[in-house]
Image 1 (cartoon, rainbow, N blue to C red):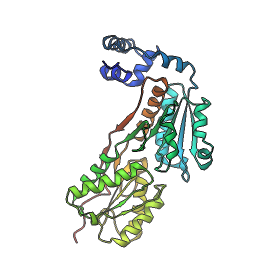
Image 2: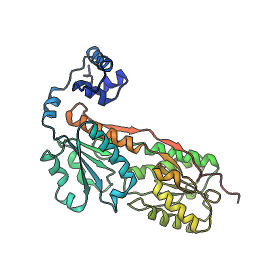
Image 3: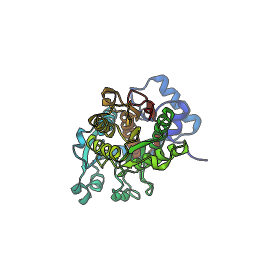
Image 4: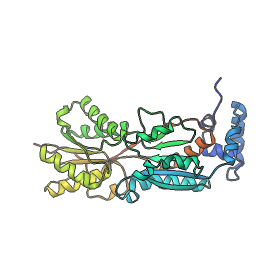
Length: 341
């Protein structure tokens, strides 16, 4: 019979992994009622705490290493800011520190990603939104060091990851735009991440299943930074080459905001002439004019869950992680029915 894990105990009790972990560590924050319920479930299920994990915890640096991509002004990016904020807040709750690095050429060339773990400066490394070119991360496949990809994955590597559901995001976006009557939809998405590729391909597939022709779904790369500037440039190409488009689906909100600016400069109106939709639901999305329809990705919660998972991986209370978080359609003012032509 398979040995029950901390995840099984949490599921049985209807509590979070962190609650079970706090009970195991006799943390006074846990109420006596909750403690009794968790301990009773452990006895009933035959759960045995991992003694090796306890010994490992005693050698803990109480630090998580967080690595972000080498992009322009990455620390000013609200997408990364939301995820890092979630990681940081969860670290504080566990009395952990957070070490932040950029995967620039020097970081990669000198294999600093391995040196950090080998020197025990961190208990686990969290790598946020890596690109398809980061093949050097394969080194963590057979490594003894805890490692977690955050909002990305590699289909050809056996690496732990936690991410939002990009394929479901694409299906929700397609259903929304097709449901409004759009059949000629431009797509702006980067291809430097597997999640970006998944999103583009799943969106095209979902539209075709609902009656669109592939040739009516042109795609332009928004650039590796997924920025407003990239969205502006891509929208200019799309509308220049395909003036009959009635909607633009952007792979994130920043690309969508750039596309909205391009539509405005062409003397067109959103959504009367062109509907525009984004992904992520960053705070600015609700304050554009018109307010942006988008797919909500729980980025802050993703960061919190990532930090929690990283600590459990270090303690060996969790052996692996391939978790996908649900998403939600948020309809605002930037999408509507296509114009009569």
